[in-house]
Length: 270
Image 1 (cartoon, rainbow, N blue to C red):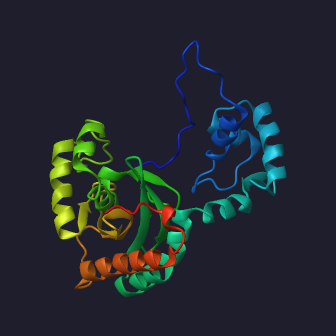
Image 2 (cartoon, rainbow, N blue to C red):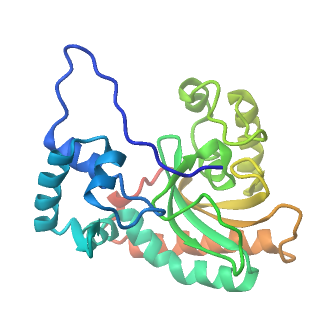
């Protein structure tokens, strides 16, 4: 499956306002991706769909702000953006979760993912690769349709099913021939996930790869989820699902303990 990002596009109507300079700056920043971490001015112009002169002006200002840095004959994302990203509540949760994720990674020998839900996409906060694992489509900061991933199903299983039935697109996004694209079928699966606490997928996001996942639940709301990825046809260690659930629960406990005076950082539903 190709993972090359297409230049951002946006529909325009005759009365629509032209893109702001801030919109163009974000279009330019989004041109960087895990497969093109250093890009020349010409490459950035092609990937962003912006005129080269506009890209040149934006780069000069973004370099001044620390959002972009020079790298030999090209440019790269600046560490200033890393600091901003680390300051989010999700970044705080990732920091608390890292010891538990690392322990699960060492014990299981599988690829460990940590993610949150944004709209109907999964956004990956962390990925710990298994030694010798094949190239995957997931990356830190990357998005995938939640219905195609075990980690996304673990998160969706704690949403309101009536709302999902009304607002999920029909058909759902498809990444492989095994992806669940029918909303009613997905919701039936999510009901089972809510009962068992474990979500599964086999080749639904990428052929040949499978995942199991468990939600990080705080007061009935899934604030994140953890998954184990492995080649389809291979086996995880015995009690892997139990270890997965324990990891998710420990992260939730650490987040809950650390939220004294900061309860507004995460939903706290009863």
